[in-house]
Length: 323
Image (cartoon, rainbow, N blue to C red):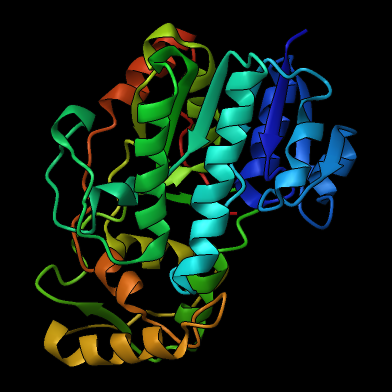
């Protein structure tokens, strides 16, 4: 039985990935930062408490000689100090990947983000037509880009792969879904911003499809040195998304929609970002990063993901609930 080390297994994506690998027949060891999630406890998987920003915490992770390392642990937020993101999302990556190479790990799989392409309008481009947006200023995608570039420069192609999910939702989501539901619950009007008026694609990636992509990235020969965009095939607009969430979580609530010009809302977003610079979560929405996310047409191709699923004998998971 092969062993997979999953970092960040106490979190939302990490706990789902650990469970998915266990179901697939792997021996799973998960790192947790502070607490073991209920999901991991129920599965009875081995866990190691580790702070990956601490250099001394890395060597013990390889005591069980993992065959693969799936690195999910990260600081994920649209606000915060640059130094916080560099430590967690770049320095920790380079140390863990170097240790993986030194310990003979077959492949280091890095959970990145589709935000490395930038927050612009897209029209179905695939990975070969997409490039890193070197002009990003938000530290979250900034250090994801730098980490991917470091892996490409320092690891043999066959020893790493990068998975780039879009907006992740599904079982156990503690981030985007509850944040949006809270907004819909309290807002007398649902606002869209800019020219798309809510008709732009909201790029959803069910957590189950992320887990399947992680497994494919781990073992497919053609995945070596490659990045894959994880995106559900079903096209959902921002307006669709709001209405679907309301129907599931706020039954009976009637959504009234309006559109504001970007010139009016951007100063508010800039203020939210500035006031949240020392916080782990925004003081209020939208931040500049959130504004650019919901106001652009993030319409990518998922052809590589589907091709990898086909190679693995997997089917795409089809959305049935946001819970």
